[in-house]
Amino acid sequence: MNKKKINLIILALLSMSLHTYANNFKANGKIIWKETKNNYSQLNNYSLNELANLLSDEYINSKTKINKPIRENYYKVNLEKGEFEKTIEFEERERIEKERVVKLNSDIDKTYALKIENWNSLIENSKNVNAEKNSIYLAAFEVALGIKYGSPRINDVKYDADKEKFDIKLISTRGSLQKRLEVPVKIDKAKLFKNLILGEYYTPYVFIEIQNNSLHFNGIDVDLSADSNIRNEYKRASGFDTVFFLEKFISEYPSSQYSNIARQRVKMLKGETNIRKELMKIALNQETIEKKSGEVKKYTEREKNNKIEREQQERNFSKLGSCNIGNSIIHKEKWNTTTSSGNIIADGLFGAATKEQFVIFYEGIVEGFVGEKVKVTINDYQIKQTKGGKFLQPKTNRSYEISKHADKFIGKTQFYLKSRCTN
Image (cartoon, rainbow, N blue to C red):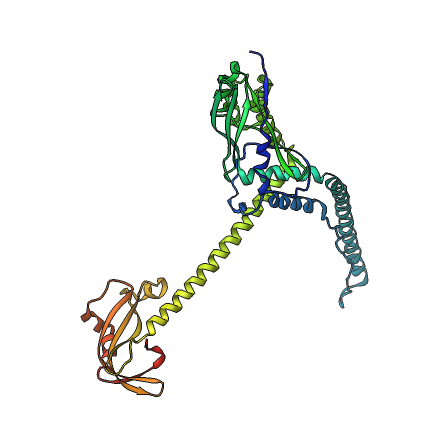
């Protein structure tokens, strides 16, 4: 079979699909939207252009903001002759110390010279970075496109044999980007074309051009020579994910669409796409920052809501009810206690004792008012356990001396603030 590539021209209408998501581009040029495995969920709040700006600015700053190294302070000879030390002994000790200091200071000079050499190299590289801002931004935009929208996918394909055109729906794996494309393909190639683009291992390479502050989708490449054997061989080679197996596949199938994908992967494995790799690291770092910021925000909001809820519970807990004379009101009192596990050592060292909390509900009758206070006579009470162990029977409360405590208030007059009344 003759090997032939068809460039699928995507309608200009598609160039508008991302325009609302990104504008004021920093550069003009061509990029590729392709398979993206990374998922940076925390960066979804950025627009496409904001994310590209963030990545490119961070990259350029890391390469251009270079501080000149500072030489370490030299060592000095600072010896004193001992009271009981002979001059000849001191001079020998001083000689040895001077030799040691000279060597240390020589090492400082050598280290500093290497740092200066490296610094000069970085300065030269930074000049190149400034000169290549356009290509750096395009690389950042390509990375941002993958982060924001994931990978391109063929979703739906229909062929009009009379018009000899495919109606294709292109979607993104993230971000809900989708568009229908009208692609002309001769009828004798149509079946092969459809089988290929709907194949399990096919991922379109979408060629995009940034021009005059808008995105133009120029097309995708499809290799009609690719058959099932080539796809299977590529799957096997990419499974090893090593330069050796990928280059072996490329040498056997140099014109295959899958060889183009393999070449991209080989470049990445060999470190030839250093800019892209560093941009991905910057994105990962920003993802971590955004995630931590989100977690702090959620924690702060949760703590704020919990505080409001606790305060509301405290207010409700202190309420007496309607304080009209003759009405029955409820005064609540918390009672905290601890039940031993039966082992004093275990209680002290391991906290084996059971911590428990009870609430005593005192029932009283409103007798009248004295200034800003309500006069109440207590006539009954109930005890409920709210924390720890099994709920106790009323008779068991005596063992905690809770009832003895509550008994003291029966028939007694108590005064409570009017602000605790609900009326």
